[in-house]
Structures are given as C-alpha cells and as structure tokens.
Amino acid sequence: MLAVVELGWNQFIVKKWDIIDVKKLWLEAWEDLTVEAMLISDEEGKDVKVGTPTIAWSKIEFKVIEEFKWEKMRVFKMKSKKRYARTIWFRPKLTKLEVLSIA
Image (cartoon, rainbow, N blue to C red; front, side, top):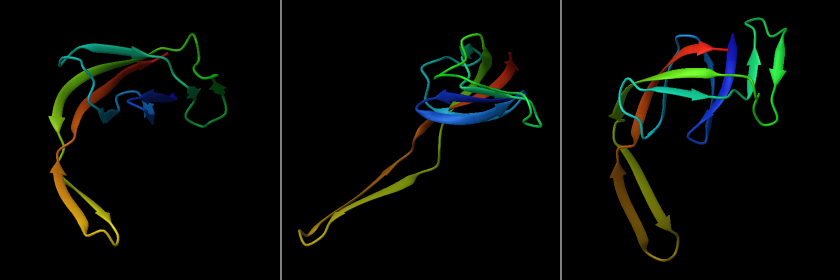
C-alpha cells in the first residue's frame, strides 16, 4: 500500500518500512506518531482513495528513529544597486521517521 501524508508542511509518498527525513518534530527518539493519510492506494494504483483533505478512517503509524542536523547550507542575500550582500550558513534540524503500518 502507498500513502500520501503531510508532515512539517511537506507531503511524502510512503509505503511500509520506508525511512523519511522531515523537518524537526518535537518528539523523543523511539516515540510513536500517528497521522491521517491524504491519499491511499495499492501498489498498482487501481484502488485509490482520496481524502478531503484527509481520509478520516486512515491511520499511518511512524516511529521516530533519531533527530539530527543536515550538512551546512549557504544562504546568500543580495539587493541589486544597493551594495547589500550577506552570506549566512546554517544546518537544518531534521527528524528521521520509519513507517510501521498503513491502515
């Protein structure tokens, strides 16, 4: 089964035992998380159920594996004709989730 879920203002296509990286969630490691799916389908795409905005009876269970920081990213801002330029570096915080079940 495939499902489309929304986590951290992003949508992900997941199936059982997938591991995804999402924006930081305020959960501890090895905690469980349950969300409703926006779309559920079988592997071939023949039986598709679409929610408005989510499917009420659906349940996608995740397990938090770890929280980590991604590699450094450079952000460059510039305003033309104003002699303004600024460079900053940051490391986004992410959470690694594993899909336990799709129902």
